[in-house]
Image (cartoon, rainbow, N blue to C red; front, side, top):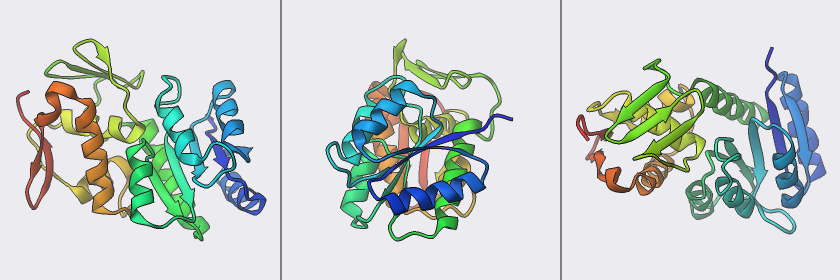
Length: 231
């Protein structure tokens, strides 16, 4: 059995212990870090499948850790779940725009946290739910599902785990319109509690990275999003 490894980054020992307890009950391997610097060192030296990241850390804060992860080729595919006492939407949106895949605010219910962890791990493993070919192509885009890589006109795209899953969903169903709820269900699981704003932020981030193909992802007013049938 391939045991997944989760890195938990928080400067509160009680939070580390609580999260570790529930993750281990799920059969997951757990690494703990109390600072941003320690977390980055672990990410460089050990295989990690998901990071649970507090925003308020001594030294390098969680947002900077996330930014550095998304600037590193080896760390880009690792899903990031923000865990923070900051519940203001602005802080959450900043984290998502930097490349985080989801967030949970403190105080939190352990069962909610575990549900989010399960969804992120499932999504990063499965990728897309339809279209089983190893390679997907669209107007100069080439997506390698096995290697979790995407290129545009031969140049690599630095996509977060959520952006990658979103791109796979769109280009495997050209012309299809997906509501925000359908997007959430397809790439994160049914009944996944997240705001429409979060979906919009991820789409904006994906468009920004698609360069000349940015306008291929269309907003269908009052419904959701689609990628044009022909690039």
